[in-house]
Amino acid sequence: LKIVMWKVYYPSFLVYSASLAERRKPEPGDVVLTSIDRLEKLGPVERLYGKHGIMLVRMPTQPTTR
Image 1: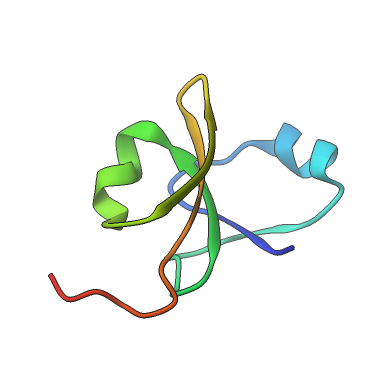
Image 2: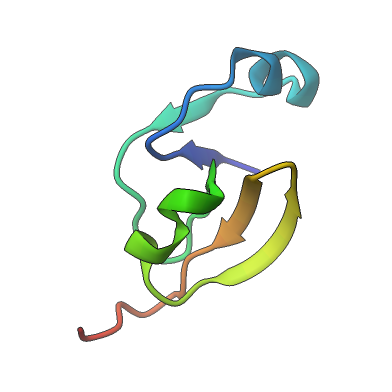
């Protein structure tokens, strides 16, 4: 599973997940790790997990119009 880190950098996440995360703007269908205060800027997302202000979400597969 590829993870996109958006507007955050958590090196410990990279270690514990044993995978590389890309630091870029999320695209449709991406799973994104971000902070709760940045969540609103992503628009509608599927919340997968959240704890201590860190959120793991999935972007919709189709872009939404704003």
